[in-house]
Image (cartoon, rainbow, N blue to C red):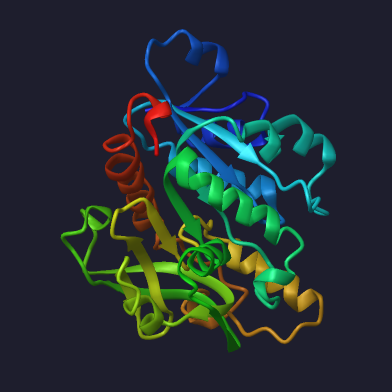
Length: 305
C-alpha cells in the first residue's frame, strides 16, 4: 500500500525507483479513506538519509501513511540545509494541537552527554509528555529509546568501554507477542552506539517486557505492557552501507574506531558488505504499523487518551 509524502521530498524519487508505492499528495486527496498519521521526530544529523530509510520501512501498511517530519526548535541541525528543513519539517508548536496514530523518535549522536545536558532535552520532554495524550503508539530508536526509557521509567543509560558497532544476532524471547509475529527464532540487526541500558533494570520494571536480546548487545527490543511504547536499541533501518560510511567517517577524523563486527566479508573494509537484516527490518515496522497502530488506534483520533 502507498506511503503519502510530498513529491519534492528527496526520498520520493529514491523510493519510487525501488518500486516502493509512494503516492503524491494530490492523488492521495482523491482517495476516500483515513490515512494513518505518523509523526517522525528526526534527531539524526544525516536527516535526508534517515528520512529515506524510515519511509522505506513505513511503506508496508494496510492504508495510506501520512508523514509529518518534526524538527527541534531549540537546536538547529548543522548537517541539513535550512531550505530542506523549512520545506519539509515542522516545529512542535505547529503540530501540538494535532493527534497522531503513531510517532517515531530516532537516535541521536549525544550518547556521551547526560540526558539533562542535551541542548534540546527540555523540548524532548515536552514532546514525550504531549505524546501521552496525542499519539497512540510510539516507536523509539537507539538513543531515542534510551531517552524514553529514562523519561518514563527512570532507567539510566550506561556508557560502554568500547563502541558497540556491527551486525549482531538476537534471540526472540516472547514469540507469541504481536510485534514478533513471523520472526525467526534468531535474527540480525545493526548497532552503532556508545551506551546501553541494563537488562536487569528493564526486567525490574513491571510495565515493560523484553522481547529480544543477545549476549553481545543486551536488550534489543522491548515493549510496554499496554503495547503503546516500543523500544529498539539498534538500527534496523540502516542501509547495507551505513556502517561503512560511519566507519570511514570516523577513520577520516582520526578516531580510534574498530572495524564493524560481523559486517565486512573477512573483516576487510575493501569488501562490499551485504544486507542480511532487511527482512527483519520490514517485518518489525510492518508489525508495529499493523498490530499496534492500524488495529488499535481509534478511528477518530480525538478519542486518543
